[in-house]
Structure formats: structure tokens, C-alpha cells
Length: 294
Length: 294
Image (cartoon, rainbow over all chains, first blue to last red):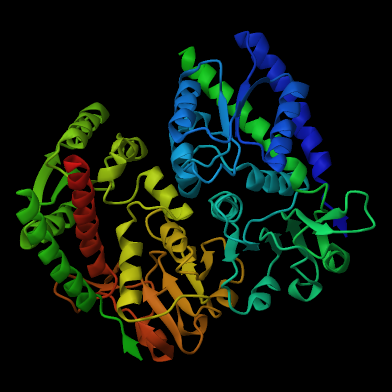
């Protein structure tokens, strides 16, 4: 059984990004730059935003921090986004989700310039992904793909079962894998799926992204399958100092002995997400800089 | 075995559209209007365009015909589209595909205003469909849904196998069915799928959209399944006056005895496509007129 370590893959990605970033700065005289917008004081969001900032700093990317008050109005937020859309020194724009309830996330996302939407959440990027055109792809599914590629796991013709149909993971994951050139046979399952186990046991590759701790048990996988665990769940654990531990959507202890390969939690898919965000930002910077110098 | 007659469903749709159209004209003083752009002289395209015109005329919709020369440049075509985008008396814009090889279909589609893209091909409409937001949906998958709804065929929790991953049918079909509220478990198969039959025999509902005549044989379906045949293929037939007959992607003669229900070809899904185009045009007209009077 092989453990698919995200950390190893992410390190390779960061190495490449480091040299891409240096080459970019040398050529254009300014760094690829990510603007991160946070509204309110949610501690988890603050910690995510901090992680993104760290990644920028350590690679030499430019970084812009916009921390707005919880009471920020929709108009104020949109005004900032429009300003960042026009700002030629900003290449990627990320609005940390979730937003406070009085703000309309869909409208906010739709107002981010498609060319700077490094989260890949804009409907036009989602559509381009589905129809196989160039665009930004949501970071977590992109990270899963990177892991599969890094470890040389073929998906062509294979039956990939995606557990979960979120807009951030399940749907873009399925879209990516069914494209020509990837050529996986993809099934999307979810909370309403009948006879779920009868489907998951068919998976050559099972991608769990439902946000339910230890949901996938050993009876749900076939011998020799490959399991990608996207879940990151906190479960109470009195034996830990902080009172909880992180577990995936997969019961790793009992499932992993039956797998050909599996991603651990933590240290699997999770570490890829920010790496892919940086990769998307690099891509945005290159495209925008090339367009600018045309 | 029940035959799912598209004609019956389409007639109901046309009835509703007829009265919606009358109400629209009464309220706004002008009809919902579709502009159809044809480039070149492909006989099949000319016949499709003619069918759309007929549907407009018989419902009382406005209709604009733009028949451009085969030699039309990309710029000329885009200029026309931008003009139609701004024209307040035009609500839907359809560019008949395929375009001559020297024109870039993707760029053309991306230049159609999202609010007038009644074919549902613009990436932003494709993306909105996948993430479950309001937008225009490609007409053929919408027609399949209408047939399922009309005959009261539940899809929730059912395993739907979509054969084919085209941008026009397979992918939007899968997107529609996996949404919350529809809740089907969807598998997308294609030419690279391994052990295809082992997957199709699991289908509660099998949707064939691969453009291969009589591809689905009786060994590929389970007893009591529902089969939707999107294929319309010409096969040579010396016994017919015109030298060919139309067949679907499904071997109807041998498959249908095993089905709970099946769509015929012709007279099944095919007749729904133009009906859904008219429905989309009605929707576009209502939205644009409401926006205009706000």
C-alpha cells in the first residue's frame, strides 16, 4: 500500500513556482501578486488567509491584504473588487469564503474579473472547465489531479467515483476527469444516492469529498482501489492538547489496508490547495503581463 | 413498455408558449424575438434554420434571419453579433453551428450576450448550470428533462448513465441531473470507458448521446430500465425513397422489449429541441423586458 503524500508533491510545485517567480520578476520588474480579501473576524478564515499570505511571502510573490469590517456593505466590497480588477499590479483576487450572511457571495464572485479569478469560482471559469477550454480551475480538484499525475496514477478509462457534489470540489473534480485527454469514466454520488456502496465498490479511484468524518468504511471499497481523501474534519479528542484531531472522510485505519494507494489526512490533499492557488496566481500573472506587453 | 413520445410533450410546451407569447405581446406591444444567424450554405444547417423560423412564425414570435456568405470574416460576424446584443427588439441570438472552418466558434459564442444566449452554449451559462444557478440550458438536455418530467419519471437517487460527453448534450445533461432538487446519481461514459456494458447494465435510466447508429444493444441494458435515445443518425436504406432512414443510438427493435419506457427515433427527443429553444427565447424576452421596464 502506497501513501500518496501531498507534502512531497507540494514541495515540487513550490520549487517550480520559485524559479518561475524569479524569472517573472527578472522579466517584468514586479512580482506575481495576489490580493486576498477577508470580511469579518472568523478565526478559521483568518487562519486560512494567513496561510495564503505565508505562501506568497516565502515564494517572493507580491501580497495584498484587505481586511474589511464585518459590517462592510455589498457596495463597499464590490467597489474594492472593481478597483482590484483594474489594478495592473494585482494578478489574482481571492475573496475568502464564507462571507457574512448579509453579503451575496454569488454576486461578489461574478464581479471578480475572469482573468484574475484564481479560485476558479467564477461561472465562466467553471463553464470553461466543463467544456474543456482554458481557464482557472478550483484549487482543491486541481491539487488532486496534481497528486495523481505526480504518482503516475493513470485515470484513462478508469472508473472514478466522486463522493460529494459541492461546487468547490465534487463538480469541478468530475469535470476535470471526464475531459478528453483525461478520459476517466466518472460517477458523482451524493447524499441522495441509492445503494451507495454498490457504486463505491466499483471505483478504481474513489475521491471522497463529502465532509463527513470517517464516512468511507472498508466495506465500501474494492480491493486494490486508489483512495483520495479530500475531507478535513475535526473530531473531539480529549487525548490531544487542543481537544480535537483532524480526520478525513475516509476511515483510514480500516480502509488503507485494502488500497493500492491512499492519501493521508492530514498531509494529503489539504496541503495541495494553497500550492495550486499559487500556481493559478502565477498563471494569471503570466497571462496578464503578456497581454499588457502585446 | 411505454413509448415516451416527444411529440406529445412538445405540443404541450407549444400550447403554453402560445399563451405566454400572447400575454407578452399584450403587455409589451412587441413579440419575443429570435435572431438566427447562418453562415454559408450547408444544406442540413439551412434546414435546421428553417425549422426554427417555422416554430417562431407558428407561435407568433418575432424572427430575424441573417444569412451570411460562406466567405464572411470573423470580424463581420462579430460585428453583427455585437449589433444584435445591443438591439432591444432582439431577445435571443442563435448562431447555427457548425461554422465554416475559417471562423472561430468559441470566440463567436463567447461574444453572444449571456442574457441572449438561448442555445445555452456561452461558458457562463454552462458554468451557471453546473453550479446550480439560473441561466440558459442547452436545448436538447432540457428537452430530455421535460420528457422525464412530463411522463412522471423520477430521477432522485436513481443511477443515470449518460453515454457521451459532448458539450451540447452529455455534459449539460449530467450537470442538470446531478443538481440538488434533481438528485440523480450520474455516470458519464464515453469512447474511452473500460467495461462499458458492466456500467450501462446498472442504469436505471440510460441516456444515449454518442452519435453511433444502433450502438446500444439488448445486452447493454437491464430489464425494466428507462432508455432515452438522443441519437439521430442516417443509415442507408434502399427501400426508402430518399435512400436512407433515421435511427437512434439505440437498437430500438431489440432493446425496447426490455425497457420500462423508451423514446423512439424519430418522434422522441428530436422534436423537443426546437420547443426548448422557443422556451428559452420566451424566458430571455421576459427577463430582458422586465429589466427594461425596471
